[in-house]
Image: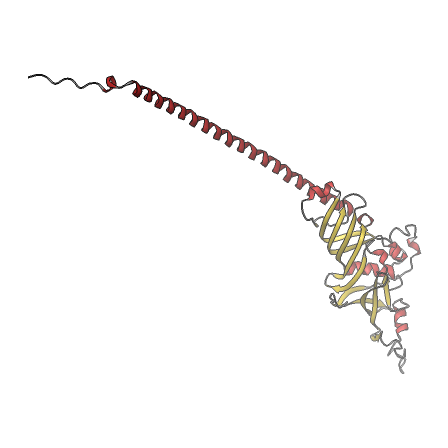
Length: 333
């Protein structure tokens, strides 16, 4: 019996075309691997480029934030240079990005909120050579009080609970503002000082609120005094004068226990049949207070220069004023 022939080896039976196909397949795999490497390399460089760009953006943004923070700090320094009497804890705010506004040397808007603001008045420097010893006695002074020289001796004025909105504010001296709208109070203690300067013959007054006012009603204050050793009082209403000053109109008086109505200027007889005082004429009563007319006027020269007083009423913190003006030099305050 004849043995079966051995099975031929597949490799030995492969033809030339098969070998070339295998080589091409291997070459394709190598090229694919190289392409994959190049693709991964490009992705890595792209990621690195994006990371570097992100770092640069962050650095630039951080620089801008730092510059803006610095600019806002400069705004506060500028405002305090313009208004050195501003309270230390005052709130100073602006709108928008400040840096380009500083570069233009003008702030679009500026808002101030402060518990107090002390300004130099327009009257304080007008009569700097006035001799305080020439002052008459009374509420304005005893010869030692420079307030007795009148409003010319009032060199400064303190406002409380101040709010102000300004536009087009220059950041260089004289710190000019295009528009200013402000609300502030003159406290009762400060009001006593102003009244003493404006009416130096009036006895020392203690002023307290009597009727609180509003934006539509002025309200009233009571001024207590001692006249010839007897308690006396005046009741005032705040009024804005045509000149833009502040006037306190007397609406009633009480002297020696006698009430005098300003609306009845004739008053009554000065004595009763028993020789006592039963009524006083308005003129006589005013004389006891050192007044020749039923009002005490505080002129606009003691108010912030460039601002016009438009409203005044009695509030819990004093007499509240509304003031406004255009093209105002803050450096003059």
